[in-house]
Structure formats: structure tokens, C-alpha cells
Amino acid sequence: MSGQHVAFQDGAPQVFEADYVVAGSGAGGAAAAVTLARAGFKVALVEAGPWRDPEAYPSSMYGTMRDMFADWGQLVAMGNPLAGDAIIPIVQAKLVGGTPVINSAIVVRTPGDVLDDWRERFGLGDVFNEATIGAKQDQIERELSVTETAGVGMGPSASAMLKALIQRGAEGHAINRNVREECEGVMQCLQGCKRRNKRTANFLWIPEMKDERGGLVLSCAPVDKVLLENGQAVGVTGRWLHPETRQKGATFTVRAKRGVLVAASATGSAPILQRSGIKLPALGEGWRAHPGAGVVGVYPEAMDMHKGASQSVASLHYRKDIGIKLEHLSLPLELFAARVGGAGQTLVHKLEAYRRCAMWVSAVRADAVGTVKQNWLGGVSVKYQPTKKDIARLRDGSKIIAEMHFAMGAEKVWPGVFGLKPEIGPDEVHLFDNAPLDNRSYTWVLSHLFGGCTLGKDPNTSVVAPDLHVRGVKNLHVVDAAAIPTTLGVNPQHTIMALAMVTAERLVGG
Amino acid sequence: MLQLTAWTFARIFPTTAGLPGLDAIDARPLIRQLTAEAPFTIRATLWVSVLLFQVTPLLTLGIPLPARWLSDARVDEHAQRLSVSNVYLLRQIMLMLKTIGGLCWGAAPEVRQKLSMPMYEADSGRWRQS
Image (cartoon, rainbow over all chains, first blue to last red):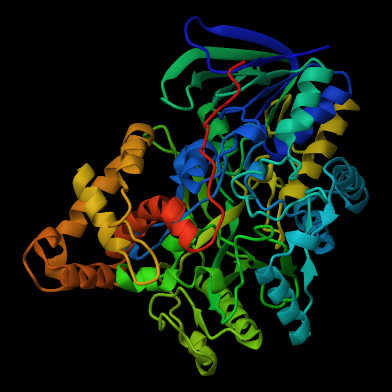
């Protein structure tokens, strides 16, 4: 029952048919597509990026930016530069399998307090609760070989962080990852995993959907619009885009007999609905993230960030009282070179210590709320800036990390904060208390993104109802991070997959 | 622009006693590749950043000369001062140059060998065409 894959096409317009069409093949799209296909429906999965097999993943970060990142990593969140706002890079992938192909494979169950909050404030009722989400998360963990990081996956930098947390009396744990025990700890998580140890949809769920269940995959096929007829979603349309030359190809239309599921990410789903002519007051609003930044510790002995997984230790100890998650994050040398302060001889002298450096980060459960909109150039604009309170959280987290580095024997730390000394010694950690509350002083990165099509019970403040159907349109659902109405304070891919699967099962059930 | 970009990267990532820099490693192949492959907006931002690096010694050192005409020591000082400039957009220019230059420098076999790190395999860029 082999299905079909259609990559970049030039020439005459092409039309396909399916029961369901899913726009986007990341955590939400792939999970929804395989669920619908397993129920016997013909599913068309339409992905803006190309389909790369693990053996063809790049090794270098240049190749990763070119082959994996959405538009070479150009997407940034901006406020008003004239008002002193910062430019913050957004990390997202564009390929079959989506961002999970290039993330650190962190799997965290949806926290109970988040589900409680969603039930009380957003009217989730019985649609998504600990039982329905938990059952799907059990299934996902089995199917994606989720295991606790151990052995060579724990590089020296991560081991030191875990030891520092224990010594501090703070909660700390080896991260659960969708990675097989065969992980060789070669720090290629961010470039994808050539060894197929990171279990991602592009070589599991999507081939199952296509090869075993007769599904259709369109790759290099960015969806432009959802087709709406008589208030009902009946398909999607777009135009192929060559992943190397960026040449536009033929137009495609995929007609769906039963419905359309949009899962084009927190930066993509709302713009698709906007381009489709859907006008809801909350569309593009409620955009949120976990902005984060790291502090580097420089040790007398090797910490070898190039060994182990890119992330393998985390702490939720400060999630509730401060609103931060602490994580170990190893960076490839190329990215580290940009992250370290200074230039010229000063910079390269610092980089001589790369093997002795460890970077641990604070990811902030931010209060900031932004927007995502289609812009007049045909691209996407994200307006978002962490609030002063968010910056203060990061500052607190950075101070804790600096203390942990020194507790583990670091000789100095590099805060990476403009306005603070570039190098801080063990007796100078208090300086963090006076670090500026200015976004432009921090090397923020946005990696966990939410909203733009947020769910809720109030039609004026939500785009999708608690069952994730788009208000005012029949047979149209948003099944990815775009629907999530709050930050989680933990890594979101597990929650996104579970929401998508539960929604798809409800559709299947009628 | 190729030569000027390579020259700029060499000043941002110079050779030290401990590591080879982009003055000892030819960054031009990767710059050529980037010129051929990257979207216009990335190329344009890179070229603007390279040009601004040239014209800003007046702001960092008070010297009204292009960076290229300065001594090695003065250019090094210029690069460092630009990276810690009070002007956010000037720091962002340096971040852009460090990011692209870092892609060249951090993947270079000479650098990785000196740090006893594994070499990268070639990036095939392959994707399923059917």
C-alpha cells in the first residue's frame, strides 16, 4: 500500500486528493498525520522544506543553517529598534520532520499545573486532561524510544551541572530524550543525528504514513492558503519552492474531503490563516516563548562540550518560584565562537579555552506576549520582547548558574551580558544583581515558541476553540504550538505531539 | 567584496599563539559558497557589515581612515572596541560578522585539529527528490 512523495515540481499546476490534509510536518503535523493514517484515512502531509534522510544530514553548522534551519536562521523577533528593543534570533527548522530534527530531543510531560491552568482559564474541559494527554504521551514515549540520558550521552559538562545541582540541594535530572540507548554522544543533535539514534518523524511516522498506509507527502511545498468554500476548509494550495535555488515551481492544490489540519508552527500557522482570509481578532496575537541565554564557565580541566548530547541535564527547581528552567547546553565550536564576547586577539585567546568551557542556560518562562503577522513583503514578522520582569528572571538564573560553575571549580565565568564585566571571578557573582535590565544587553535566543492561533473558550480572545477547531470555519483545526495559550516552562515537543494526536483521534471518532 | 570579507574575517579571527586564525586559513572558498547559496538578505547584511567594519574606526578609535589602512594592532583594537560598542546596532554588526566568520573558522580542519576535535564530514546537501 505504498503511497507517494512529490518533491519540487516545475511546470503545470498539480492537484491531489486526500481525506485529510496536514500543513506542516513537525511535532504536531507528523503526530496528527500518522494518527489519522492509522485510522485508515488517506492523509496528505504538506511540508515547506525538503525531505532529508539522516545519512544526508550536514555535519557542520554552515550545512545546518543551509539545509535545516528555516530560511538560514534569518527569522528574528523584533520590537521597535528605535525604542531600544533587541533583535532576537528564533531557532526553527524547515524540513520534513520539522524542528524536532534539530532540537536536543528533550521529552518532558505536560506539567499538571499547566493543564489545570488551561482547564480553568481556557475551558479545556474534558478534551485535554491529564488522562487523555498522559495516555498519548505514554504512546509517544514507546514509539520514539524515550529514555533517560545516560552513559556517553552525559558529557563532562552535563555531569558537572548535575553534580552542581545536587551539591546545591536543587532538583536536577538527566533529561529524558527521544534517543535510543545506542547514542554515541558525539554532539550532533543540533545538526540532526546521522546515526538515527534521535528518533524523529522524518524516518519513523512519516514513512509509516506514506509507505504502509498509502499517504501522500509533498515536500518543498510551502502552503500559501487554506481553501475555503461555503465556510468550510476543503484543502490547501501553494507553490513549490526549490530548496537550493529558491526558484518557484508549479502551483499545487491538495483537496481534502474531510478536513484540513494546520501545523505550520507558531510562526507559520497564523500567517497561513491570515493569508486565507480568516479574520478573527485574536489571530496572530498571544505569541509567547521561552527566551534563554547562557553563562559560560571556564574550568582548569577539560569539559569537552563536543562530547555527549547537546543537552542532557536540566533542573525544574526554579520553574515555579523564579520562572526559569536551567539546562546544560553544549554549543558546537562555530556557534560558540559567535557567542563568546570580544573580537580579534581577545576573542581567539578566549576560544583557545573551548575545550575547558561549559555552558549552562536559563530558559525563562516569560510573561512577554507578542504577535506574529504576515508582513507586506510576503514574509512573517514576529514582534516580541521579554519584559523587565523576564530580564530579571534571566539575571537571577544567570547568577545561580555562575554560582554553580564556581562551586564546580570554574576559574571564571563569561556572563555574556553587555554592561557587566566580560569575565567574572568567584568573588564577583554579586555583580549579576546589578546587570542591566535591558534586552539589548543579553544574547537571547528564542527556541520554544507558542501562540498566534491560541485556544480558549472566549471567541474574542481565541482563534481555536478548546477542541482546536478554528472558530467560524468547518473542518479546519490548528494542531501545533500555535494553539498553545501559555508558556509551559518546559520543553514543548511532547505536549505538541500529544495535543495533535488527541485532536486527530477525536476527528477519527467523528 | 570577497577579498574584503576574507580580510575582515581574518581580523576578527586572527592567529594567536594557541590557535590558527582566518589569516592563516583561506576563508574564501566558504565565502564564495555562501555568496552562491545564501539568500540575498543574508548576503546583503554581510556585505553591509563588512563595509561598516571598514568605515567605523572613526567611531571606535577616532581615526578617519578605513580599517584596511590601519596597522594590525589598530585593526585588532578596532574589532574589539566594535564588539563592545555602546551602540547596539554596531554590536549586532559584529555579531553578524562573528557568526558567519565563526562558521568558517570553527569548521576549519586546522582549528579542529589543534583543539583535538573530530573533523567534519563533507555536507552532502542531499534531499529526496522523489
